Length: 357
Picture 1 (tube, rainbow, N blue to C red):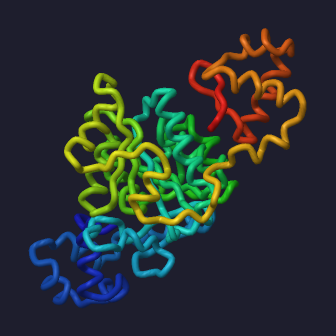
Picture 2 (cartoon, rainbow, N blue to C red):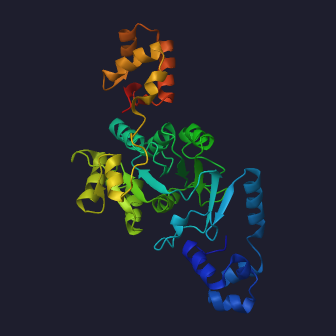
């Protein structure tokens, strides 16, 4: 909360004085020597100007059971401390109990205006991570981000949403239920922002550097020429992290960004999870990638009937399913929901359904 003291300066101060405690106990002479002409910082330290707001934040943290990770702590996400990441925050706030130092970590990003094909591609990619101990990071935005988190949950993988605001709110509100599911199923919400931080467009590009730094590799599924996904991709490249992108047709708006970073050799072309494993030198722990047919014996007769219909159609609506099954619409809706929960099918935009896998 000191005026004009950002992430990089904070890390430099820690290197110089050792700890925040030592900084606040320095003499005024020592502070003047340290900060030179920045007298406003010296005054804030000597007058303890931030302390009332700090105490308010500590009360919020305690009340809401928020974890606070300091960059010198062992459980702080150590990938944020790697060389080249000096602009990453010294403090991270988190809801949830996910290990932020997993053996394998992947960030998946893309446009908020994802196409059905992009969402399907995301689900197929993450299904290929099943049983591999991978933590999936993304930004909890609409589109590809939400698809990444959902696919991770459907495959029993921990997933972390990195927010551009404090933990006293959730944006976008449409993802509130997804966030609740993430927390209830072992995921987490992560942010560098304190409570009370006003929503601002500038906060989200800053958030993207954390998404890029938290993982071993960043994968761009769909992206236009401009936007948050390419910001994340460029930051990941600057952090010397592996960068991958799915190619698309040259005339597709949301393939332009992916095609551009592949053509510039900034990103490697990826087609599926196997390409990622080969490129990163990861050995598979799970012999069979994905859940495949292991769930099918759990289907009852009516679920099997609907599944057989879905399997014969790339995409199909409920009215068409009713005509083919002779089941009433309320019953079909219940069965489709059960199949979604069993990770057998997925609802696409336009209330169309398709089989996963």
